[in-house]
Length: 334
Image 1 (spheres, rainbow, N blue to C red):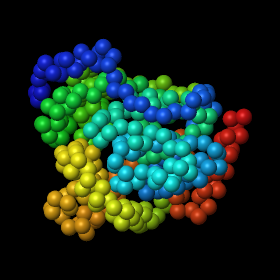
Image 2: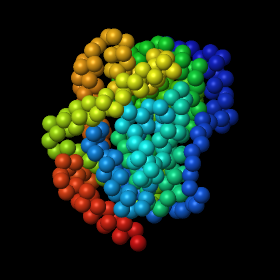
Image 3: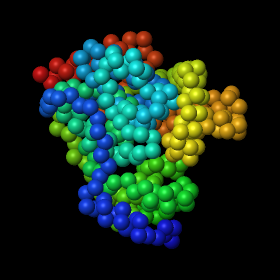
Image 4: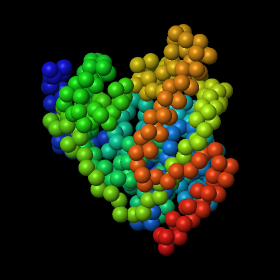
């Protein structure tokens, strides 16, 4: 049974979406426009060193970094998302970070559109991050329904709870449900939003139009799982030492504890600590545990794509090995 009847608000939202009203963001772009000669992707699980490797490669290439991280697009969510520091951003131009407010919604279609604009303006950018769907939207040229976010509809849906929402998604779009984790409220809401506005499952509206420019996809993973665990533990400690607690406290005070982004990995655990539900030690342990689980899901996602060329993140010669492969790729573009 449908747990939510379409009211006037949802109908009006659907009418607006069909009229072509879309969520737009502005971002600074270089003035020149190029046909991209190619694209280099650096992907993999969290804490595998993607950002550090990308910084080195980008400096050698004289290029730019395009972030493929679904939380780094939001302003003020800095420490807990491992956003590039001010010094790193001064060292190498970064795009697709800090492009919307925490109360706004950036859809996959929004991201894809902005990323493609930037790819078309640089000759050989690096697309770097661990948000698999962002990367797939570019390298596979996913055709994404352009349905603007419907705030009233989302509010109605959210009130039902994730368990009921996911069960309903399984009924109306089992194909999409198989690709979405049962606890992923953001993607569940988006799939149902598209269904309500258009009347068709999101999985029926998606296709592919692969880009014509060459793409090199580099994947990083730790050959020793214990090494990744230590990396995650060290990064969590560093985040706390860098003022993460104060960041989360300020965000809670400014936007309220019900802000959806505050229920994402790490921020949720720190919010529980600030509420007195756990100790700081427990919050750190939970953050490490949940980050490990997230990294495992990321690895499974990326391992499903055979075109990704994998490198050992623990190899002391990682940079030179990847650089050699990048040079081969660049030489073939000439």
